[in-house]
Length: 144
Image (cartoon, rainbow, N blue to C red; front, top):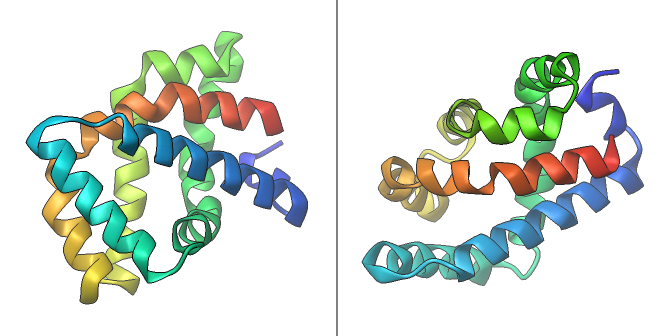
C-alpha cells in the first residue's frame, strides 16, 4: 500500500494534516537565536494570512510529499522499521521533502509573501526539516 492511498479518506487526511501542523508549530516554537527569530517572524506572517493557512497548506502538500516519501518509506518497511529508517536517514528525507516544496513554490507561489518568505528561509531550514523527520515518521506510522 502506498502512503498516498491512506489520504484518499478525507478524515485520515485531515487528521494527518492536523498532526503535521502541530509538529510544525512545536518545531517553530522551539527555535531560538537570530535564525529562530527570523523563522518565527516569517511563520507568524504566514499564520496571519489566515488562522488555518498552515493546516490548509499542509493538506494541499500531503499528496505530493507522501508520494515523494513513498520510496523511502518502502525501503524502511523492508528494513523492518520505517519510522527508524526515516529517522536514521533524516537528511535524505529532508531533501526529498524540500525538493517537493521547492517545486510547489515554483509552480504556485513564486511571487508574493509565501514565495518570498520561503525563498529567504529555504537554505537555513534543511536542518529544521531534518530535525522534524522523526516526528513526521511517527505521524505517518500512526495513520498507515
